[in-house]
Length: 179
Image (tube, rainbow, N blue to C red; front, side, top):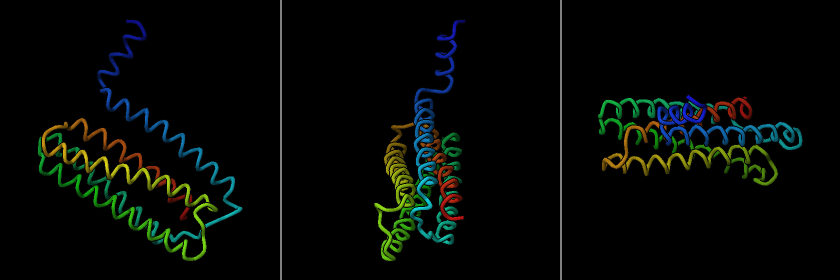
């Protein structure tokens, strides 16, 4: 079997949606990596005193939302649409709580005199918040489609890949910015 045929067989085993998500995550990993390197480069010029308590709380919330996402996929594989939907809604609530806490932290920093355009902290966390917001929107859309049986458990698994990626990135950002 030639190389092209073997690759085609592997794509069929993974599924085109999962493969697409893996490619997206790989490219986004490089983008976050570049931002983290840039942060280290300019960090000494302007730093922001982030609250480690708030950062820890946001981390707990986001990691908990990964657990609910994992439970949603597990319930979906058992064809338990009701449980899968409830777990995805809990994941969405976790994402929204994370965003509210982070925006509150930003507001406090801005009130202390820090400016969005003068600190790489805002760039890194803002880019991450945009990803969380996109995930929340996508999960909301997916939940509606899941309830009406217009999407599959495979679609739920693809969204979980993205959500886990957002959580893993946050762990690195938490360590970098808050510890």
